[in-house]
Amino acid sequence: MIDHRPARPPYRMRPISSTALLVDFALARGLSIASVLRHTGIRDSQLTHAGAEVTFAQQVAVMRNIVHGIGDEAGFGLMAGLTCRAPQLGAVERAVMSQPTVRQAFETAIRFAERSCSLARHTIERRGDEIELVRDDSMLPAEIRRFALEHDIGALVTMQRDAVQMRQPIKRAETTVGADPVYEGIAVVLGVRDLAFDARRTVLVLDPALLDLPMPQANPKFRGLHAVGEDNRRSSASMVGPDDADRS
Image (tube, rainbow, N blue to C red):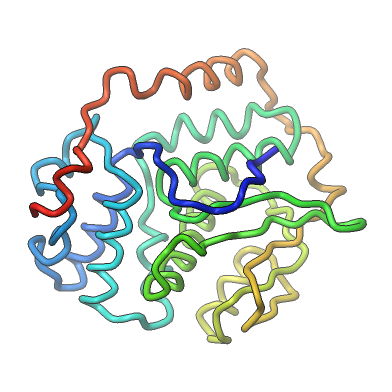
């Protein structure tokens, strides 16, 4: 089960690869590397270091610089998320597909996102006969919440296409953003027919029957190896120090 604690900025270090993808997106939109990394404590040479990690605050700072630089128009975050092809995606695919049920596969994918590219927290809650995936981005500055939400949706579409390759167990969705043709198009891609805008919170209502289905490629051996790998992943990683955050 995904964590149910109230949202707060996570202190876990995260791979720099997701931040590097954000930077690449910003450069393609015409921003300079100096403006994107301003006040983040990240040096451009670290973006290509496979073992480097960044803090939650540093990733937030990069996203804020991007939004300030390109504006907060609908679709920009989505485009950034669609480029999210992390180097470890192959391992994520195997971890997701090796889970015994669709529910556990879905939770594994969400955990990966929260530890790498997503800045929000997610909880799975049962309400009557329905199961909800609730997004909490209250720890984020208001100015980047739409971009961050779009980014995560784009990453979900990418994962569905490149890794999971299965029907998403989403019955309907509510989102805090206003209506836009961009979002309606993505709803079609995800198979979501019932989409409500300007909601109090962002929620995906999941299909309980689909969540309980067995995964066709369940593999307990690899699932165990993946769990051990999560615990030990940071043993040899080099970290971008959070104390540098005001010096770039």
